Length: 193
Image 1: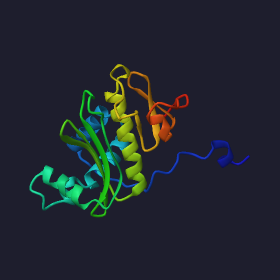
Image 2 (image 1 turned 120 degrees about the horizontal axis):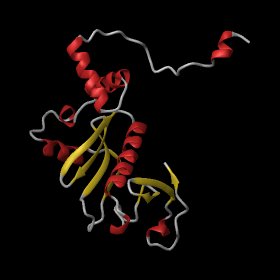
Image 3 (image 1 turned 60 degrees about the horizontal axis):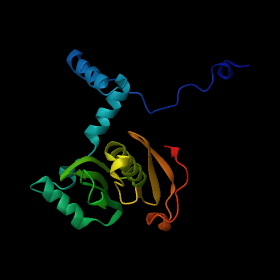
């Protein structure tokens, strides 16, 4: 056996290595941020760089006077969408989740009780799909309570049926056929996502 066969394939590549000197104060700030977010130092540096390079709604719509005006422009200039999802009218919280393509960017966000938050802006369709589904799943886990009934109509989105298996735990329960929306067909048993 060669040494390579004995040690295995090794750590998966993340990308090119760079060396940066941050100084004592900045390094302490990075370490504090990493600890607050449960990340290793290297993960924290990658996430902070990613956040710094990700555009905001103001970057995409610099001519907008306010954030509300920028969101109106998104609505006016949308050329494609992954969907708009709103909570049922009697839900305890008013949530709108949207994923729209405008000005060459996919803009994924949630409007919770009238305030836009959890915004992801990306050039890539698949990143938008992942962000959209993750956002809906996270919001469902946070706001859905079985005793209050459906959060998103029939607790589904984009053909998927979501089930709450425990407080704060959401499972995919299979594809939701059109007939499941009016309750004529039971969805399949859930499995964890």
